[in-house]
Amino acid sequence: MWRFRIVHTTGYAYPSPVTASYNEARLTPRSNTRQNVILNRVETLPATRSYRYVDYWGTAVTAFDLHAPHTDLTVTSSSVVETERAEPPVPEATWSDLQSEAVMDRFDELLRPTGHTPATKRVTSVGKKIAKSHGPAEAVVAAADWVRGELDYLPGTTSVHSSGLDEGRGVCQDFVHLSLMLLRSMGIPARYVSGYLHPKRHAVVGETVDGRSHAWIEAWTGGWWNYDPTNNTQITEQYVSMGAGRDYTDVSPLKGIYSGQGATDLEVVVEITRLA
Image (cartoon, rainbow, N blue to C red; front, side, top):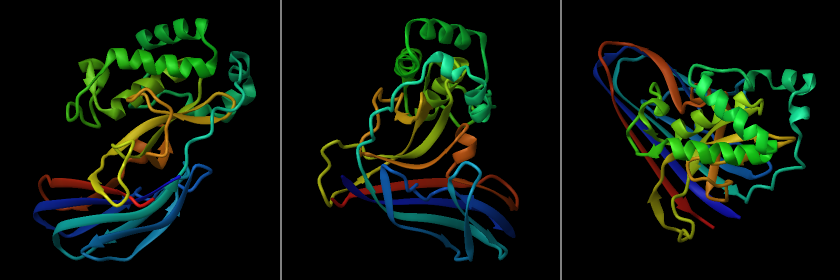
């Protein structure tokens, strides 16, 4: 078991005063069989009242709005979380199970293309080849292997609106989106998971390091299980999950609208400390 403290700070600077803004923060870790949230606090500067709810996909959301003019906005999420190694996949479903009406109806939304995970002839063709020689659980790993052969990991090379497949390189969200395209083309229900990854396998207790937001997939092959296509591994205690959905759009850490002119400067800092 690992225990983390995670401090995620996002700062916005506006070129002219913003008179009002409405925001949603998905910065609260999930409590599930693999991780336990001991503490989470989402604060803003300027300070304002907020309320929480759980969205359609099961992600905790902190919603807040500001109605006094401001030129800066800082959102800080502080969490303490305990994690364990994920359980191995449950007994595997067959391709026939995945093609049953019950499964297809249950997971319909996680089998459909989205704006970030469109259906393409090339990906569908690759999916058919993988499915012919692998069972569903094996196909998840084979899909990740294929994606790693298609994309080079280069931080900062893409944005949330670009396609890593077109450029042959990308960041973790590109690896996840392409993996989702491939899995869904095979009829494997799969979702995008947002969270954090501690960069050091043998982290020193008490040492604070520069962390990073990360993304991976959850696939359903008789039960849900996690796989990280960027690093080609099942997840470990180093991973902390925040939210899950169809693609990045459903789990973006911060989204909102504001009344004002011009673009904003954005700074994100993530600090992770292993406590135990």
